[in-house]
Length: 445
Ligand code: HEC
Image (cartoon, rainbow, N blue to C red):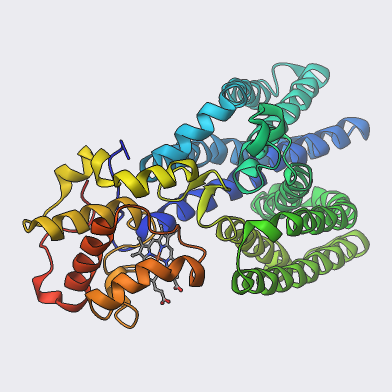
């Protein structure tokens, strides 16, 4: 409550984070972690078979990986920090409290990774075969380590496991979904990199003589990696249900999640099947089929986007499960705030409130504190677009008192009765008396 409230106009806070994060996830998995695997593998092959031209081709592909990871990849990485910390400073603050040393270490490893990437790329010719290849191996290890570290923190948000009781760093880090998530992310990275690598390779026509060598290798790798990836994803889903049992209190949500999970499992299986098929074709025919060949990778990106979406979705109404609600209120604070009121501690919201009537002003503040993290005014998930539920002040007040049971993905209303009534009055005004809407309600602090 002691932080400014940020509302992203129209697309909403969640979509803002999702867009930045999706770009970052695709690049960090496909081009950085996976990219290092792709290049180092080809590098190794070129040395073992004494095939200089294959090495040159790998170097050229590395240049593209290098440019994209150090520009768009690094920028969106910072972008995730910026957007998440702006939207939910309490969440990021809490995670920093719990995982300070993991983050600290991750940052150091990340710097090392970038230095090694530069040495690997810029020193390719200078350091010669043996040393150059060793640098590549260290680069591969460092980039995987960054993923290994950040996965612990990400996993703990959804499945904090024993940490909730023990408060121990290690319980949080090695949480129940950690290992399956790490396995699926690792193999996803390798799969994506093969797709990207083959795609980029097509632009280096001067090395066409090497294409069959790469295709054969890629085909073999796909056949091996894709099933392991599927195993990772399925065991990830398996690691959730025991949690979900008490994660999500109502049958409705469990049903929704179950349907979600089932469909996405089938989709993953189909995509992995396609990838294996593509692998077999590459291996036997040693050729690709233009854009058709990249369909499996494209589908994989979409499926992985949905995997991240499911992960974020089933975590609602928390950002750290059972510990911190999405709107930054700690579960433990709930009884206290119900007694004392949420608006007591809200200097920042006070500054941004535009209503002049005291009751509406109180309602506006409560809305900004408790609802605005997920609802825009009239954009995505806009609150003014829900007139069916928010018909008049009385019905709204009733909704606020009871939605905890019917809408478990939203944090319960927290605060005093007078605050709830004020929120109801405010919602009634902005939903049902549109022409009386405050002039400046979007995107302000
Ligand atoms: C954690 C995110 C989150 C928070 C915080 C949140 N909501 Fe929601 N809310 C949602 C989602 C998601 C939906 C469903 C959107 C959909 O079905 O398209 C929703 C739906 C609604 C609906 C429509 C319900 C229906 O049955 O159609 C209302 C009304 C609503 N929210 C009001 C509020 C109010 C008031 C607050 C603050 C006290 C609030 N929400 C806080 C995520 C949130």
